[in-house]
Image (cartoon, each protein chain N blue to C red):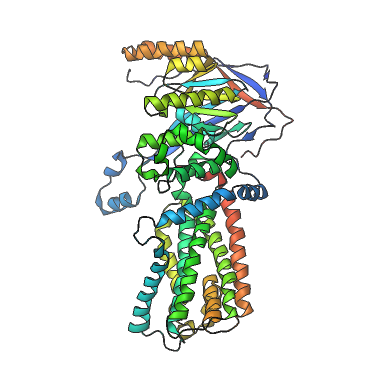
Length: 295
Length: 297
C-alpha cells in the first residue's frame, strides 16, 4: 500500500433509529446490591462445588495427599517452638508454651491461607471470569469456603496436639466455644479477602506486598510470645486488642489451655470487626463487579 | 455525510442493541524508542521504574448496530479487524471502553473460549462450567452424557484437564458451552479447531442451536459458510464498519476486495473498500423516551 495512510471516507448517511430498550438489559451490568446477594445465593452450588473440588485436588500431587493439610502446621509449629521456645526462651511466664504456640500458629495459618487465596481468587480465576457470566464474588467466596473446609482437619489437629503433647490439657465443654470463634474468624477472612481481591485485580503489585503485610500481622498478633511481656505502652496494647486475629487466638487459648471463660470484650470486638469487614468487603467488591476480568 | 432527519422506528423490542461502542486496549509495547534515549544514572532509574511503554490500541472504533429477533448476522473482515473483539463485547466477556451493549437475554459465546480449571478432571470441569452458566445439578446430570458425547472424550473425561491436548481441551470447552440453548448465540468459528470427526459433531450441534436461537452472530473465515447461514453480513476493517447489508451483497464485495488484495492490487482493493464505506448508512440509536435508561454510566 502507498506510504501515506489512506483516509477512510465517512459513511454516506447516519440513520437515527428509535428502539425500545426497556425490555433489554445492559450486557455485563452490575445488579443492585440485594439482587447481587440473591444471585450469589442462586450460585451456591457453583461455590460449593468449586470449593470441594479444589480442596481434593490441592494436594493430589503429593504422596501423603490430604495429610499435608495437617502436617504443614505441625512442622510450622515445631519450627517456631524450636526458635522461640528453646533458643530465644520467649516462653517465660507462659503456662503450657507448646499449647500456646500451637493455638497461635494453627489459627494464624488459617487466616493467612484464607486471606491470601481469597485475595488472589479473581486474578487466578480470570479465565473462568472471562468465560462465564456469574456473580464474581462467587470466586472469593469459594476460595474462603475451601479454606474453611480445610480448616476442619487443621483445628482438629490443633486440639489433638494439645491433648497429646505434655502438659496435656483436659477436654472440657468450654472447648466448644472454639467453633463460633473460628467461624467469626472465617467471616473476617472473607471480608478482607473480598477487599483485597478487588484491589489486586486492579493493582497486581499488591500481591507482592501481601506476604509482608501478613507476616507483620502475625508478629502483631501474639502468636509466639506473650504480649504482656513485651507490650507495656497502653495505646499499643489497645490497638493490639482490637486486632481480630489476636482476639480469636486469645479466646481459643482461654478456653482450651487455661479453662477460663473468654472475656465478653473479646467476643464483642471480634464479632463487630468480623461482621463489619464482611459488609464492607461485599459492598466494596460489588462496586467493582463490572471491572473484573478486564485486561 | 448527512444525517437523515426522519428517524426510523423499530416496532418490536430488538434482540441486541450496540450503542456507540468503542474499544481500546492499553497494552505494553516492547518498542524501546522512548527509553533508550535516556542517558545517565537518572535516566536509567526512570527507565527501570517506569512501566513498560504503554500504547493504546484501538480495536473497535465507534460503532452502533441494532439486531432484531430472527436475524442471523455474519461478521467478516481481515485478521485484526475487530471481529473477535466484537464477539467478546457482545458476550460481555469484556466491557467496552465507551458505549453500551443491550441484550434481551444473556448472550452465549460458542467457541473454544471457556477456559477451565486445569487441575480438575474433565468431568469436574463439566459440572463446574455448567454451574457457572447457571444450570442446576439436576439439569447437569441430565445433560452430562450428551456433553461427553459431543466432546468425544470417552473415558479421558475422568483425567485431569491439564493432561489434555489442546484439541481435546477445546472440544470439551465447546461441548460445555454448547450445552445450553441460548436465545442469543454467538459463534466464533475462527477459533474452532479439531479433527474432522469432531467438526462434524460440533457442526451438527451448532446447527441445532442456531435453529433454536432467537438471533445469531457468526464470525467465520469461510465466506460461503457466512453467506449460507446469515441473513445480514457486516464487514469490519481495522475496527471500522465498512459495510452492513444483505449477506449476498456484503460477501460479494468482500470477496472482490480480498481477491484484489491477494493479487497485489492494493489500490483497487482500497478503492472497493472506500466505495463500500462511502455508501454505508450507519445507525444512530435513539432510545425511546418513555424507557428508563438501564443503569447506564
